[in-house]
Length: 209
View 1 (cartoon, rainbow, N blue to C red):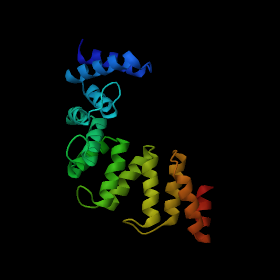
View 2: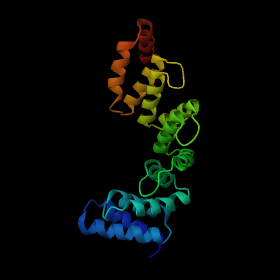
View 3: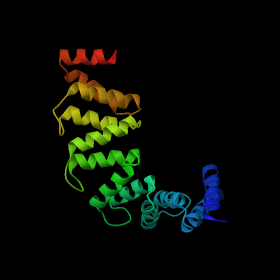
View 4: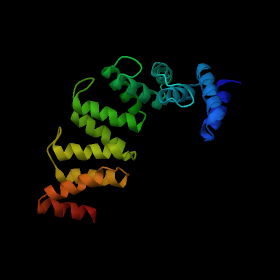
């Protein structure tokens, strides 16, 4: 059976939810597909090793399989390898490489990578700080439906991080984050509403209507 066939059978077993022998068999087939050069299988098997799902947890091996997927340009593989480098999991911490990998994944609209890339640009981790670029990437992520990106934009405008403080813009972004399902946004909206002037409250009311 070639890599594609192995991967398809592995996905069927892993997604069945039966656990036990089905999960173990699925993990073995996923490894074989990855070793046969199937890129999505390499990323998935890396995730299984990362979480200890169907196999014994092994962060070093997970990083190696993520690297295989990232080297082929798979967006989720790029993000996962960046995550390992950012946190120093399964190998040395390398924020510069993490930022590069997040950028490559973000360019393919990988939303989690956009979130991390924005954080690194805002703080200057792994390279120079560029708050305007961070907000631009988060705007792109929010447009893709990522609630964390919208929330981060709210934090940026509320605190004046790399831009003039603007509570109305912050309110709008927190409102969007709330609509996208962010569990922390409602509390931030309440805090802002207490801090706003009457004029600012009127502006948000006009926008909301």
